[in-house]
Length: 310
View 1: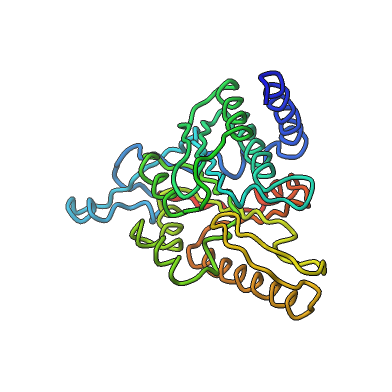
View 2 (view 1 turned 90 degrees about the vertical axis):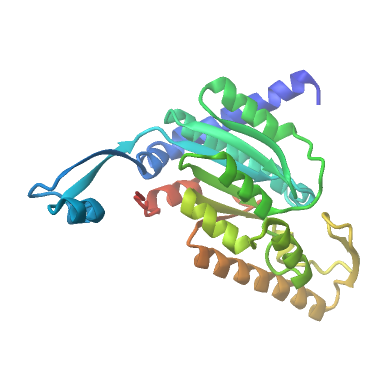
């Protein structure tokens, strides 16, 4: 891609995503994320009308009279976009790949946050951290973020969500909104051997890492999928390649039993993934590359039950 082509691509994404932000996202992001952080302000004696749940029982016990903690809303937030750039993200049976789709969603989120004067950062990962751009403000910073989303070439092919989330928990010292954009293909429904290997590498499995990240931050898992990953067409003899491992599998897609098994295996994987998300208590979004995402994202913002954590 030439410099002029790159500038044109970044500008095209900026115009398209800003239009989405202005037309459908106005107020949604602001009202449901802004001010969710709380900073400690003071400790003072309890007064009639104070919330009983604000009582600091340790200090109350030591002083012999009730004291309450007072907080103020932290208006400025930080958002981190953690985007999967492994080989499986390059797949797309529709007009765009999962990587391109993720870039458009991430850019929309970035411009939404920037409009609210929040900081935005970017993490691109495969089976390791490929690129990290710390959260900052400003149009120039957002445009660089979009450029990296569009053009970054990963050095590795596989996926390790555990490693990405462990990095997030290490580098983000203040509570942040973390959007994790990935297909989760190699996190659920895999062989016990591979899951054990990934867990051993990070000392935690995916479920534990999701739960830990959601405790420290406000984690939203964005599941990206392509229709061809759920339904196998009747197209005769096919050779299917695992993009991340290179493993080849020959199947006869004319056979109804083969297509049914393919669909059932994927359905089981998705069911396992949903159960894991519920156990971890994380908010989730699911997008297909064949669909538009703006109204779904807006609906998520508007209906999401914000959790005021202290």
